[in-house]
Image 1 (cartoon, helix red, strand yellow):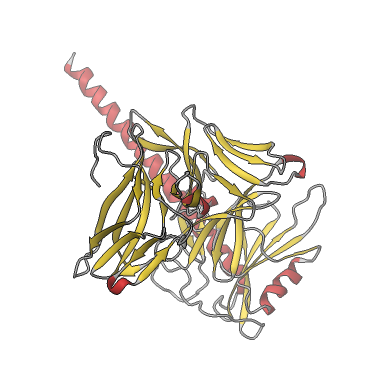
Image 2 (cartoon, one colour; image 1 turned 135 degrees about the vertical axis):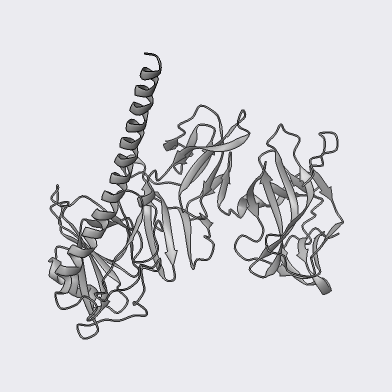
Length: 452
């Protein structure tokens, strides 16, 4: 996108208006074409609105986008892309409807504001893209259709959410604003699991949240601030974002001397606390590396596909068996839970449930001394923990894959591999330090000899 001077910047467009972008005839991987529409009269980084054509999965998408500097903060095609060919058209009709169109006047996206006396399309200093009438009354605004970013000053009411979509994945993440908490969720098919939460004290209910300069604020129904996630930097916050690849939640500020946005707060600070840190049937180890949950006794080559040999649903003692892994837990929460049952009962519940892939049994002694059994429909979010924590993770596999020694052999094998992997890393680090000091000592001795 071009960078016009402050004098040339345009912050609104009047009806009627039409802009056309040509779409390449042949598909070109990585192609992005944009036409700048609007820009705020602010110091850099400022807000810009643009019409965009982008190569995605063998096709071209047509969308209306908003940027803060070089960061995309809103996209009309966030939930449903409009794929087109030949042309990508943005039209603000004479009766006030904003549309994206393709060949033969095909409408792929619209605001639905016909007949509402819309006069202008405008980008505001908050980054809110709005359609207004002659008295500047808002008829439509991008703030009402949040994507994966929340801007400074933007408000999200309870029961709304931000979403982000990892590449090449059937799963997606969300930030959910609920009555008693805000939570991060992993969604995979029909399965929904939380992996982080923040609650106001004293069980107070949330009505809406708002991003301020010094943190994310939570408000009650009386517009009273009841809690805040504070920024860890003195610079004012500009936006909150839900990471597309990691699912992590971050608060961001602009660093003028570096000319880029940096995090002032992260919900999750270690790799192994991320829900998809490893592929299915992988364990995130103490060294933040991934190790497969191996259950095949036959000699096989090491593969990045940890779920090799497991496909579809299987259940019952005739088809499946349970492997118990010590020193392993799961970051996913809010799954089906049973309380005050034995580990054997927990194991059998998963074994007989065709939709269950794994179970977590907790017998941690605390104020309630409650024994809990969590059932999972997928095996992700698994991480290594210290032994003796009272947590046991159990994975269901096809019967016969554990060999004649059953789960005991597999349990020892898996934990040994995790320990060896981390041990190798430690040895490499110590070996590197030893080599460094030996070389340094040799150089010092040579220097001493040269001066004698």
